[in-house]
Length: 285
Image 1: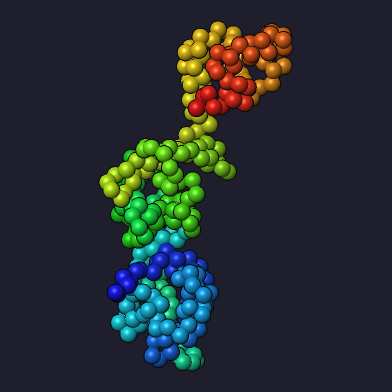
Image 2: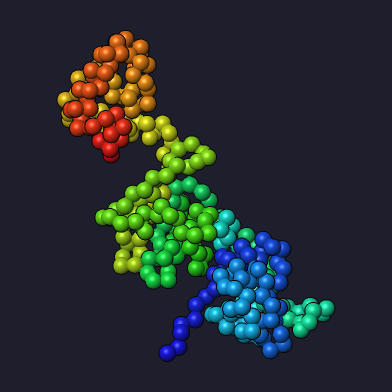
């Protein structure tokens, strides 16, 4: 049975070679056999020198033309999100022996960046294709054609590996929602994932400022307070508990004694079905 040939990771080409000053990735003899694999080629293919050296370069770069067949051009995205077009072709160094090398010849130009922020996009989830961008649409903008073979974690999130907190990879029913901080910047990012066909998932990325998050928590707390029949004073204590205020501070702010604050806290916890102040987070969710 013939094994299907796959394209190399062209985003890794940009990472491993362009950022290293376009130094040679491999020394190749006149017959097209790899004689010396550099760190660039190892990083590109994720293989050890022993697995690369002594093999035809066309086999090493499966899916790419053999050197004799000429130049290979690809549009790529680096892990930092830089979109480029690069060209690979065999070159010759007069002082080199045996003489041929494979290198990134030139950067053909930066492509327009996707930019950071709020997005709608879809990824493939089939075998060997997880994370491949199907389409991308910035919020309020026109749809963009993704770079061929670009993966969402590289092109959109600047990561070399799939995001560990990706809602697509998690279990549970659809739609799936995950929130994460924007540290070091303030605020949060909320990612929602829902199926779009058999092997495709649509994701939306929205950003929330700290003030918006606090507003949502307060709205949720008001709804819970009404549903649980909390008194006006109990609701006031609840709101300050959720702002992480100490019991003594709450008493001073509301003009009541510490003993009264503890009394209201015990009552509101009982009415909300929370076992402790720390358990309020579970109740709110």
